[in-house]
Length: 75
Picture 1 (cartoon, rainbow, N blue to C red):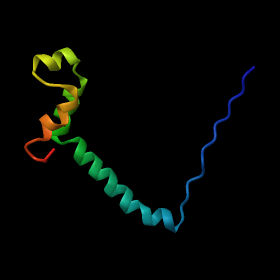
Picture 2 (picture 1 turned 90 degrees about the vertical axis):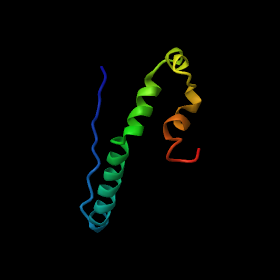
Picture 3 (picture 1 turned 120 degrees about the horizontal axis):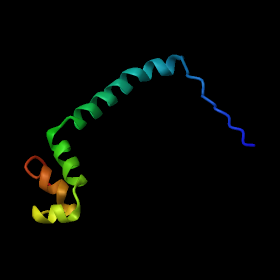
């Protein structure tokens, strides 16, 4: 017979937690902005393709970031 235990760590409601909340919110906001970028969405779609599909488009998997971001970043 197997036994399992579920433990949840108590959350801290102290001063440090209160001071960290704005930085946590800022970090989540920056991640949300990055994930909603059209270039990021394009890169995600290309990464989901097979190597054969990429070859038909004349792309290689290791050059996808360069292909997507080349007009805005020096890669």
